[in-house]
Length: 508
Image 1 (cartoon, rainbow, N blue to C red):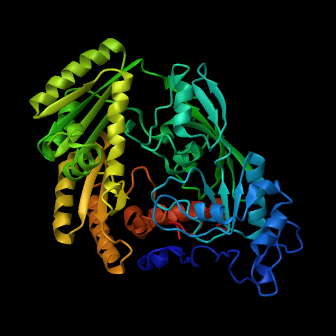
Image 2 (image 1 turned 30 degrees about the horizontal axis):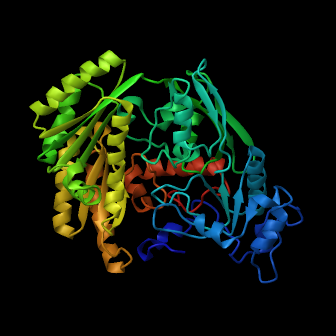
Image 3 (image 1 turned 30 degrees about the vertical axis):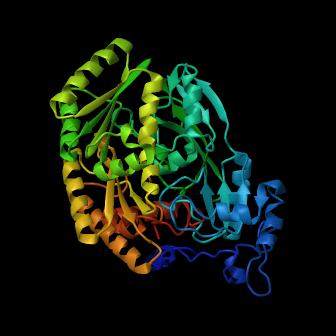
């Protein structure tokens, strides 16, 4: 398993919390299988290990064999996401329908085999890494938009639909699905639901949970459950939609989602402003809100990130300055035009040295394209980017960047800050040289300890949209508190008694 030595505890089992699991490669006793006479349960070999080929043989009785893979390419692809940790599954199954998911989970539950669900695989916290091997269940082929219904204001989708594809389909009807992760052209809606994904427009429009009306979920033992529905108000029972949204694949597999659509604003415009110093840009954020504006997006970027972007894109794209602020507004055309003028004047009054205007769709997209290049610019440095999606109260933006500069001085590790200033979700990236070196990794982990401690002490959260996964597992107890964490574990035990789904993550 390619996991950092310091964090081997990530894959240790908490036997006081749940029974020990087995993977195909583990030595097992026959009694560990619920019923070895059941044709759904593979038999152990004489050496006490489970042969993946035998599992494939049994599983092929439940799903089409063409959906099952043992190829090296598929195993390797499904061993990781965009984070650096990886662990190989024993078998990959490409579900194409709800019935495929039901069959896999029913089989896995009966056979005590772990299952890790995977969407597009573009997460940043190791959330879909199959820590204990077993079955990697891909829902990427479940990619149909089943219904677009402006009359009801809903879209019904399968989990493998790419977020940007739903947005484009809704826009063609004059409607909108607002959640917009930066990876919207490659991330899938099932993954967005699993992590309660956000994005730049959260300030005005909210996160994924605000748009999930109903879910069809396959539970760990293969049972199908529906929660919520297609109405926009529903207070019937507990908020089970909210429970599954953000559960990181540990409580069930979403096979269908009913999502809220809203009328697409007919106009939008943007300003991109450069400031001499970061505190001036942060002050501009508060000035905009205090003046009564509610932009659809407020994105801020620090000097380190800008320097990397200039190197990648050219200095003419980003003039000198230590902070960059993007302001997007949308609504009715006349209202947008008037608000843009007010904001242009305001930004000049608070110290912007250059303000670029974008007053049509193409110009706005050009600015967003520039913003999306920031992350790639940091990768171009050749350093390992530890992408921490921390959240702080908006009043703490300047304090956060000042702390980041102090952390740089103490550790020698560069820190790049950019992200969603409107809601305090600033991506604080530790840029680490030779992260594979154990000594360097220890220093970087120590820097993360300091960062997360500061964030929690200042009323923030250790993750705003990426989730906990493996990356933030060492800090989850401090972030949640003992009673809160135990409640999470109790919910997991109640729904997934045998720890079938995505085991080895932050609840262990």
